[in-house]
Image 1 (cartoon, rainbow, N blue to C red):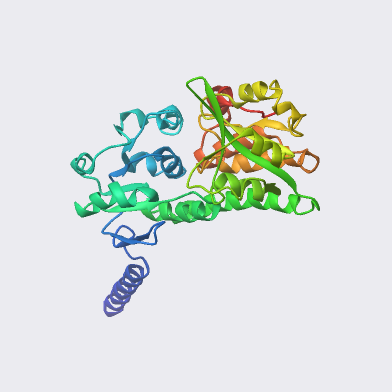
Image 2 (cartoon, one colour):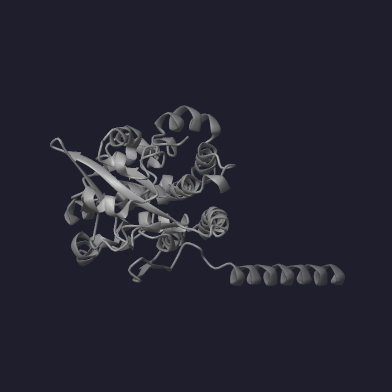
Length: 359
């Protein structure tokens, strides 16, 4: 009997010690979260937010980044939608319940957001001084993301991972991007001569067409540099897309021209430019004028798709060293690994949406 009691006592002590160690080694994962956002602000949360609102202009970029994480399906409560880049066109392929989420205008007021009782509001950083500050004054917690450069995009991915309580997924996402970046950079580093490139947005309004170039610090310029090219417009000053006339383009006379067209298929625009007598005088028009690709959104933007834009620019600039790269297969791999979209869905739903000079 005495031996039995001793054995029971030893067992109870062992259980207590194991339980005590486990309690110390496994702190609560859903409390006291501190987020450092794109403006280097520290935002403290008592728990992982369950009612997240993505508000303001360019929200589709933020939504697409959030949906790289499976937790976004349950945590995104409302978003700003509509327009050319309406998230409702793409995200139902990732989240079948997306249509049930509340849709807000881009110009939604702070009071309208407050009425939704969000745990957290996420916005682009340039909205901090306007809508963001008003929300903060109302006691709403706001996190700002930027995404306008490759470096900041990857930082923002880790911020999203912290918000959703899945830092491991953030590491997996970054690993995918770093793999593709290394593929491009390793190959283009062998090129002694860097070709001159022009990435330009074409637009039409009231029967008049115009061409504009991005700022030197935007992701479009960065992609051109990473692809081993020399952006001819890097000296142009401006806080957004800056209009340039044809005479300036003729002076630059770039060796490769990539046309972005948010209003439709960029291939149609390129066909028009190739038939234009003025454009025919440019070196690139003779076989090196390409329409920037996209699916539901153009691949030149600071949306997760920018990595496909990088691969495409590199392959069009230096086809001799990227002859093995099939951009449509890369796109299928992208949607599978990052959005969990299988091959059948890609073939039926995304492949028909592909635009631009992909071949």
